[in-house]
Length: 252
Ligand SMILES: NC(=O)c1ccc[n+]([C@@H]2O[C@H](COP(=O)([O-])OP(=O)(O)OC[C@H]3O[C@@H](n4cnc5c(N)ncnc54)[C@H](O)[C@@H]3O)[C@@H](O)[C@H]2O)c1
Image 1 (cartoon, rainbow, N blue to C red):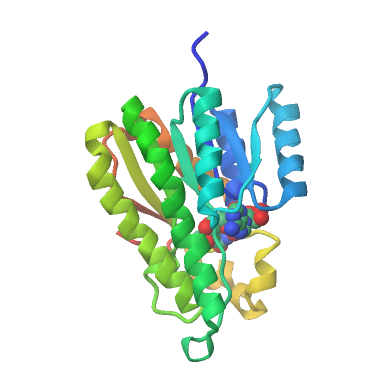
Image 2: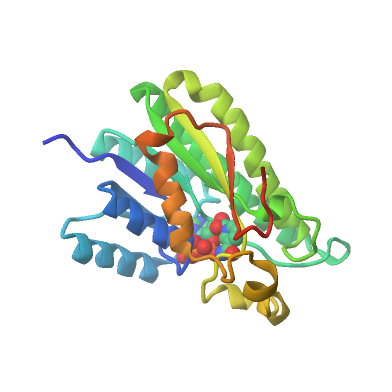
Protein backbone atom coordinates (compact mmCIF):
# COMPACT_ATOMS: atom_id res chain seq x y z
CA UNK A 1 0.00 0.00 0.00
CA UNK A 2 1.31 3.43 -0.93
CA UNK A 3 2.02 5.56 2.16
CA UNK A 4 -0.36 8.39 2.91
CA UNK A 5 0.62 11.94 2.05
CA UNK A 6 1.92 13.79 5.11
CA UNK A 7 0.46 17.16 6.13
CA UNK A 8 1.88 19.33 8.91
CA UNK A 9 -0.58 21.80 10.48
CA UNK A 10 0.59 24.41 13.00
CA UNK A 11 -1.64 25.55 15.87
CA UNK A 12 -3.99 22.68 15.15
CA UNK A 13 -5.32 22.10 18.66
CA UNK A 14 -7.39 25.23 19.23
CA UNK A 15 -11.07 25.93 18.69
CA UNK A 16 -10.67 27.47 15.28
CA UNK A 17 -9.26 27.09 11.80
CA UNK A 18 -6.23 24.91 12.60
CA UNK A 19 -8.29 22.24 14.30
CA UNK A 20 -10.84 22.20 11.46
CA UNK A 21 -8.05 21.99 8.88
CA UNK A 22 -6.45 19.04 10.68
CA UNK A 23 -9.80 17.28 10.77
CA UNK A 24 -10.57 18.00 7.13
CA UNK A 25 -7.16 16.85 5.87
CA UNK A 26 -7.48 13.67 7.94
CA UNK A 27 -10.87 13.09 6.31
CA UNK A 28 -9.21 13.67 2.93
CA UNK A 29 -6.84 10.79 3.75
CA UNK A 30 -3.71 12.68 4.82
CA UNK A 31 -1.40 11.51 7.55
CA UNK A 32 -1.85 14.74 9.54
CA UNK A 33 0.90 15.83 11.92
CA UNK A 34 -0.78 17.89 14.61
CA UNK A 35 1.28 20.62 16.30
CA UNK A 36 0.40 23.28 18.85
CA UNK A 37 1.92 25.25 21.72
CA UNK A 38 -0.75 24.01 24.18
CA UNK A 39 0.08 20.56 25.53
CA UNK A 40 -3.28 19.37 26.90
CA UNK A 41 -5.29 20.51 23.91
CA UNK A 42 -2.68 18.97 21.60
CA UNK A 43 -3.07 15.59 23.30
CA UNK A 44 -6.87 15.82 23.23
CA UNK A 45 -6.98 16.81 19.56
CA UNK A 46 -4.65 13.98 18.54
CA UNK A 47 -6.67 11.43 20.53
CA UNK A 48 -9.90 12.73 19.00
CA UNK A 49 -8.55 12.33 15.47
CA UNK A 50 -7.28 8.82 16.23
CA UNK A 51 -10.59 7.67 17.65
CA UNK A 52 -12.62 9.28 14.86
CA UNK A 53 -10.51 8.02 11.96
CA UNK A 54 -9.33 4.74 13.49
CA UNK A 55 -5.62 5.35 12.85
CA UNK A 56 -2.70 6.93 14.67
CA UNK A 57 -1.72 10.59 14.26
CA UNK A 58 1.64 12.08 15.25
CA UNK A 59 1.79 15.21 17.35
CA UNK A 60 4.49 17.63 18.45
CA UNK A 61 4.41 20.33 21.07
CA UNK A 62 5.62 23.25 18.96
CA UNK A 63 5.96 26.98 19.47
CA UNK A 64 6.45 28.29 15.94
CA UNK A 65 8.54 31.19 17.23
CA UNK A 66 11.25 28.75 18.33
CA UNK A 67 13.32 28.25 15.19
CA UNK A 68 15.40 25.36 16.50
CA UNK A 69 12.25 23.55 17.67
CA UNK A 70 10.69 24.05 14.23
CA UNK A 71 13.83 22.67 12.59
CA UNK A 72 13.96 19.58 14.80
CA UNK A 73 10.22 18.81 14.43
CA UNK A 74 10.38 19.05 10.64
CA UNK A 75 13.61 17.03 10.50
CA UNK A 76 12.02 14.37 12.69
CA UNK A 77 8.91 14.19 10.50
CA UNK A 78 11.07 13.79 7.39
CA UNK A 79 13.15 11.04 9.01
CA UNK A 80 10.19 9.08 10.41
CA UNK A 81 7.78 9.45 7.54
CA UNK A 82 10.16 9.95 4.63
CA UNK A 83 8.10 12.75 3.13
CA UNK A 84 6.36 16.05 3.77
CA UNK A 85 3.68 16.88 1.23
CA UNK A 86 1.65 19.68 2.76
CA UNK A 87 2.38 22.51 5.19
CA UNK A 88 -0.39 24.65 6.65
CA UNK A 89 0.84 27.72 8.53
CA UNK A 90 -2.05 28.48 10.82
CA UNK A 91 -0.43 29.81 14.00
CA UNK A 92 -1.45 33.38 14.71
CA UNK A 93 -1.44 35.79 17.61
CA UNK A 94 -2.68 39.31 18.11
CA UNK A 95 -3.18 41.96 20.73
CA UNK A 96 -5.00 45.07 19.71
CA UNK A 97 -3.21 48.23 20.76
CA UNK A 98 -3.16 51.54 18.84
CA UNK A 99 0.23 52.28 17.28
CA UNK A 100 0.68 55.32 19.52
CA UNK A 101 0.29 53.12 22.60
CA UNK A 102 1.67 49.80 21.41
CA UNK A 103 4.34 48.10 23.48
CA UNK A 104 7.35 46.79 21.61
CA UNK A 105 6.55 43.39 23.19
CA UNK A 106 3.19 43.33 21.39
CA UNK A 107 4.78 44.37 18.10
CA UNK A 108 7.56 41.78 18.36
CA UNK A 109 5.36 38.91 19.58
CA UNK A 110 2.90 39.45 16.75
CA UNK A 111 5.61 39.58 14.09
CA UNK A 112 7.25 36.57 15.72
CA UNK A 113 4.21 34.28 15.74
CA UNK A 114 2.44 35.40 12.58
CA UNK A 115 5.34 36.18 10.25
CA UNK A 116 8.59 34.72 11.60
CA UNK A 117 6.89 31.45 12.57
CA UNK A 118 5.58 31.12 9.03
CA UNK A 119 9.07 31.74 7.68
CA UNK A 120 10.68 29.18 10.01
CA UNK A 121 8.38 26.32 8.98
CA UNK A 122 8.81 27.16 5.31
CA UNK A 123 12.56 27.48 5.73
CA UNK A 124 12.84 23.87 6.88
CA UNK A 125 9.95 22.30 4.94
CA UNK A 126 10.91 23.68 1.54
CA UNK A 127 14.24 21.81 1.16
CA UNK A 128 12.42 18.55 1.87
CA UNK A 129 9.71 19.40 -0.66
CA UNK A 130 12.36 20.51 -3.18
CA UNK A 131 14.17 17.18 -2.84
CA UNK A 132 10.94 15.24 -3.40
CA UNK A 133 9.95 17.69 -6.16
CA UNK A 134 6.44 18.19 -4.90
CA UNK A 135 4.58 19.98 -2.14
CA UNK A 136 1.82 22.42 -1.29
CA UNK A 137 1.92 25.17 1.31
CA UNK A 138 -1.01 27.27 2.50
CA UNK A 139 -0.36 30.25 4.74
CA UNK A 140 -3.24 31.65 6.75
CA UNK A 141 -3.13 35.44 6.44
CA UNK A 142 -6.14 37.70 7.07
CA UNK A 143 -8.21 40.47 5.53
CA UNK A 144 -6.39 42.51 8.19
CA UNK A 145 -3.53 42.61 5.67
CA UNK A 146 -5.68 44.89 3.46
CA UNK A 147 -8.29 46.66 5.52
CA UNK A 148 -8.05 50.27 6.66
CA UNK A 149 -9.62 49.67 10.06
CA UNK A 150 -8.25 49.82 13.59
CA UNK A 151 -10.00 46.55 14.41
CA UNK A 152 -7.08 44.20 14.21
CA UNK A 153 -4.14 46.28 15.38
CA UNK A 154 -1.22 47.38 13.21
CA UNK A 155 1.17 44.65 14.35
CA UNK A 156 -1.23 41.93 13.23
CA UNK A 157 -2.06 43.70 9.96
CA UNK A 158 1.63 44.23 9.20
CA UNK A 159 2.50 40.62 10.02
CA UNK A 160 -0.34 39.26 7.88
CA UNK A 161 0.65 41.54 4.98
CA UNK A 162 4.19 40.19 5.35
CA UNK A 163 2.82 36.66 5.06
CA UNK A 164 1.36 37.56 1.65
CA UNK A 165 4.72 38.82 0.34
CA UNK A 166 6.49 35.76 1.77
CA UNK A 167 3.91 33.55 0.04
CA UNK A 168 4.34 35.18 -3.36
CA UNK A 169 8.13 35.12 -3.36
CA UNK A 170 8.28 31.52 -2.10
CA UNK A 171 5.83 30.57 -4.88
CA UNK A 172 8.09 32.22 -7.45
CA UNK A 173 11.16 30.41 -6.17
CA UNK A 174 9.58 26.98 -5.87
CA UNK A 175 7.24 26.45 -8.82
CA UNK A 176 10.07 24.76 -10.72
CA UNK A 177 10.30 22.17 -7.95
CA UNK A 178 6.63 21.28 -8.28
CA UNK A 179 5.80 23.17 -5.09
CA UNK A 180 2.78 25.47 -4.86
CA UNK A 181 2.51 28.20 -2.21
CA UNK A 182 -0.75 30.05 -1.62
CA UNK A 183 -2.34 32.17 1.09
CA UNK A 184 -5.85 32.52 2.47
CA UNK A 185 -7.17 35.80 3.85
CA UNK A 186 -10.15 35.04 6.08
CA UNK A 187 -12.57 37.58 7.51
CA UNK A 188 -14.26 36.81 10.82
CA UNK A 189 -14.16 33.07 11.41
CA UNK A 190 -15.94 32.67 14.68
CA UNK A 191 -14.59 30.63 17.55
CA UNK A 192 -15.09 30.85 21.30
CA UNK A 193 -11.59 32.23 22.02
CA UNK A 194 -11.99 35.29 19.79
CA UNK A 195 -14.24 36.93 22.38
CA UNK A 196 -11.20 37.26 24.62
CA UNK A 197 -9.32 39.52 22.25
CA UNK A 198 -12.01 41.40 20.33
CA UNK A 199 -14.46 43.82 21.98
CA UNK A 200 -18.19 42.96 21.97
CA UNK A 201 -18.93 45.72 19.44
CA UNK A 202 -16.91 43.78 16.87
CA UNK A 203 -19.38 40.89 16.91
CA UNK A 204 -22.61 42.85 17.32
CA UNK A 205 -24.59 42.91 14.09
CA UNK A 206 -21.71 41.38 12.11
CA UNK A 207 -23.81 38.66 10.49
CA UNK A 208 -26.69 41.02 9.73
CA UNK A 209 -24.83 44.17 8.71
CA UNK A 210 -21.42 43.19 7.39
CA UNK A 211 -21.49 39.64 6.09
CA UNK A 212 -23.19 39.38 2.69
CA UNK A 213 -24.42 35.87 3.47
CA UNK A 214 -26.10 36.58 6.81
CA UNK A 215 -23.70 34.66 9.00
CA UNK A 216 -20.18 34.71 10.34
CA UNK A 217 -17.54 32.34 8.98
CA UNK A 218 -16.92 28.90 10.40
CA UNK A 219 -13.55 27.16 10.68
CA UNK A 220 -14.90 24.45 8.36
CA UNK A 221 -15.39 27.06 5.62
CA UNK A 222 -11.64 27.75 5.63
CA UNK A 223 -10.79 24.05 5.95
CA UNK A 224 -12.74 23.32 2.75
CA UNK A 225 -10.70 25.96 0.89
CA UNK A 226 -7.44 24.57 2.27
CA UNK A 227 -8.51 21.09 1.17
CA UNK A 228 -9.03 22.35 -2.37
CA UNK A 229 -5.80 24.35 -2.49
CA UNK A 230 -3.60 21.43 -1.45
CA UNK A 231 -5.43 18.97 -3.70
CA UNK A 232 -4.79 17.83 -7.27
CA UNK A 233 -7.44 20.09 -8.80
CA UNK A 234 -5.50 23.19 -7.70
CA UNK A 235 -2.39 22.27 -9.72
CA UNK A 236 -2.41 25.55 -11.69
CA UNK A 237 -2.82 27.73 -8.61
CA UNK A 238 0.23 29.23 -6.92
CA UNK A 239 1.29 32.61 -5.55
CA UNK A 240 -2.36 33.47 -5.02
CA UNK A 241 -4.33 34.90 -2.14
CA UNK A 242 -7.86 33.63 -1.57
CA UNK A 243 -10.26 35.75 0.42
CA UNK A 244 -12.94 34.04 2.50
CA UNK A 245 -14.94 36.65 4.34
CA UNK A 246 -18.61 36.33 3.44
CA UNK A 247 -17.97 39.22 1.05
CA UNK A 248 -16.89 41.62 3.82
CA UNK A 249 -13.57 42.23 2.10
CA UNK A 250 -13.13 40.65 -1.34
CA UNK A 251 -9.36 40.60 -1.90
CA UNK A 252 -9.30 40.15 -5.67
N1 LIG B 1 -10.59 33.52 13.54
C1 LIG B 1 -10.61 34.54 12.71
O1 LIG B 1 -11.55 35.31 12.63
C2 LIG B 1 -9.43 34.76 11.80
C3 LIG B 1 -9.54 35.69 10.76
C4 LIG B 1 -8.47 35.89 9.92
C5 LIG B 1 -7.31 35.19 10.10
N2 LIG B 1 -7.21 34.29 11.14
C6 LIG B 1 -5.97 33.55 11.30
O2 LIG B 1 -6.27 32.18 11.26
C7 LIG B 1 -5.36 31.46 12.08
C8 LIG B 1 -6.12 30.63 13.07
O3 LIG B 1 -6.85 31.44 13.95
P1 LIG B 1 -8.13 30.92 14.73
O4 LIG B 1 -8.74 32.14 15.35
O5 LIG B 1 -9.01 30.13 13.82
O6 LIG B 1 -7.55 30.03 15.90
P2 LIG B 1 -6.96 28.54 15.94
O7 LIG B 1 -7.78 27.77 16.94
O8 LIG B 1 -6.81 27.95 14.60
O9 LIG B 1 -5.54 28.83 16.53
C9 LIG B 1 -5.35 29.01 17.91
C10 LIG B 1 -4.27 28.02 18.33
O10 LIG B 1 -2.99 28.64 18.09
C11 LIG B 1 -2.10 28.14 19.05
N3 LIG B 1 -0.92 28.98 19.11
C12 LIG B 1 -0.84 30.25 19.55
N4 LIG B 1 0.42 30.69 19.51
C13 LIG B 1 1.17 29.68 19.02
C14 LIG B 1 2.55 29.53 18.74
N5 LIG B 1 3.43 30.51 18.99
N6 LIG B 1 2.96 28.35 18.22
C15 LIG B 1 2.10 27.36 17.97
N7 LIG B 1 0.79 27.43 18.24
C16 LIG B 1 0.33 28.59 18.75
C17 LIG B 1 -2.94 28.13 20.32
O11 LIG B 1 -2.43 27.23 21.29
C18 LIG B 1 -4.30 27.66 19.81
O12 LIG B 1 -4.45 26.25 19.95
C19 LIG B 1 -4.45 32.52 12.71
O13 LIG B 1 -3.28 32.67 11.93
C20 LIG B 1 -5.28 33.77 12.63
O14 LIG B 1 -4.49 34.94 12.64
C21 LIG B 1 -8.25 34.06 11.99
